[in-house]
Length: 395
Image (cartoon, rainbow, N blue to C red):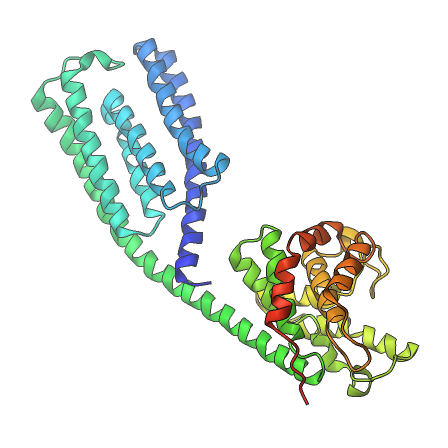
C-alpha cells in the first residue's frame, strides 16, 4: 500500500460517484424533455433528437464504470468529463441562457478529482465548446430547436461573454477549493499509511514473540503468510487486501502466548486435559486482539479465533460451513499444510505428496471444498514456498 495506490482508490470512487451523477442527468433530461414537449414552442423532431443524443452520451460513463467495470482506469475520468462537456455543448447550443446552469456541472465533476491541472483542462475544453456552440448558432440556425435569427454581435455579447465569465468564475473557485482539499487528502493518506505500517509492525512483533515461544515451529508463520497470499490472490482479492490478509494470518497462533511451555513444547502426546488447554489458545487469541484497532487487527482476530474450525462442524468451537469466515477457511488449509509438512519434536514431517492427498481427502470434511480446489490449482506455488522457506530450529 502506498500513496499512489490510495490516490487510485480515491479516483476509482470518484468515477463511481460521477457515474451516479450521470444517471441523475439522464433523469433530469427526461423530465426537461417532457416539459419542453408540453410547451409546444420547439421543433419536436429536433427536440427528440437532442434529448436522445444527450441520453446516449450520459449513458457512456455508466456503461464504462458500472457495466465494463473500468472504474479504476486512468482514462475513465477523461471519458466522464468529455461526456459532461458534450452534453453541456448540446444544451447551451439549443437553449442558450436557459442552459447556463448546466455549465457548472463539468467543473463540479472535475473538482471531485482534486487535480488542479484537470480543472484547468476542463475549463479550457468547456470554453472551446461554448465557442463552437456560438459558431453553430450563427452558421447553422436550421439545427436549432427554436427557430430564431441571430447575428454575430448578439452571439458575442449575449451568449459567449456571459458563458465565458461563468466558466471563468466557477473555475477560479474550484481551483482553490481543490488546492485546499488536495492538501487535506494527502494528509489523510499519510495518516492512513502510518497507521497500517504501525499495525504491520505490531503483527510482526507479536509473530516473532509467538515464533520464539514455540521453539520448533521455525518459519511456520512466514510460510503460512505466503500460502495465504497464494490463496488470497486465487480467490480474487486485490493486492492490498491480500497483503493485509497475509499479515493478519501471521497472528493465527498468537493465543499460544497464553499457553504454558510445558504443554506447548511437550514431546509426547497431550493428555485430554492438556489438549483442552491447548484448544483454548483460539479464544485467548481473540481476546488479545479484540480491542486492537485497525483492519489488519480485525482480520487477525477473526483468523486467530476460527482457524481451527472445520467445514463439517467438528472443530474447536463447533462452527461449520459458511458460519466460518472465508479468510479463516483459507488460513485453515495453509496452517494444516504447513503443520503436516513440518518436522516437530513429536513427529516427522509428511511428504508433500502425502500432505496434498490428505487435504484433498478432507475436502468437504475439514476444509471448504472451494478453498481445496484453489489449493489444487496452486499446489506448485505451495511447493515453491515450502522449498524457499525451510525450517530453522530455534534453541
